[in-house]
Image 1: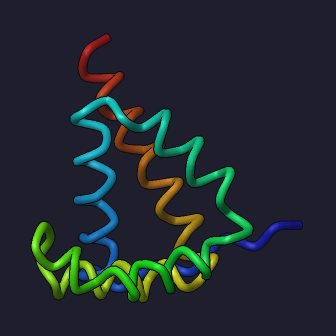
Image 2: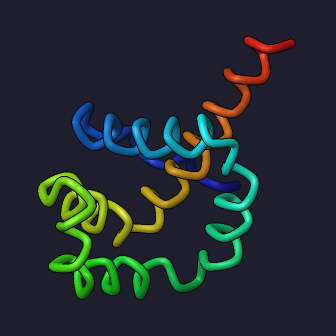
Length: 98
């Protein structure tokens, strides 16, 4: 039986919510979910790549939130929470337009 991931602190969940909302508003949830699902085995490596590219990314993103997101994605449970958050936001959007 698969154990549900523990809830995140509100600040961490807020970052994942903002990312999911941004993707869903631009209707990028399907490509994002496909990319995230296919790269699931490499989630830790991806988070380390985020740390590596942080100086470049700081030009485009708020440094504090970017670093926090990279730390969050180091753990697979948080990766699962991100996937669920994107799906939940897409469902909310679809319910509002139906």
